[in-house]
Amino acid sequence: MQRLIDAFINSVRAFRRLAATETAFQQELMLLALALPAGWFISVSWRGYALLIGAVLLLIVVEVINTGLEAACDAISREFHIDIQLAKDCGSLAVLLSILIAAGVWVIAVIERIAGAPI
Image 1 (cartoon, rainbow, N blue to C red):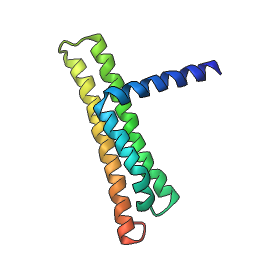
Image 2 (cartoon, rainbow, N blue to C red):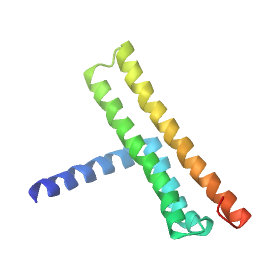
Image 3 (spheres, rainbow, N blue to C red):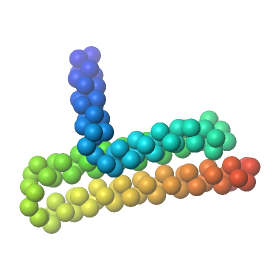
């Protein structure tokens, strides 16, 4: 049980630090705050709502992992190294792909709402 408590404390510490210092994380939290009510009106089912919010949460998870990867790379060396650049670029690509996934899910949900039926 203590391990779970320690993990929770570590997670809260990371959340606070990211929310205070990382612009991308702050923007994605704002997106989540907007998505919660918007998803309610756009979705045509509970599953659809869960998918909409889940897509935004996936984006946040990938951003957190990317930020951790960048912090680890910076801790190793701040000098240019081709492998460190690749690691950071891969993290950025993962964020971009998660943005495309989230955008696709939301576009499909809007089309479903406008069309009046699942596509």
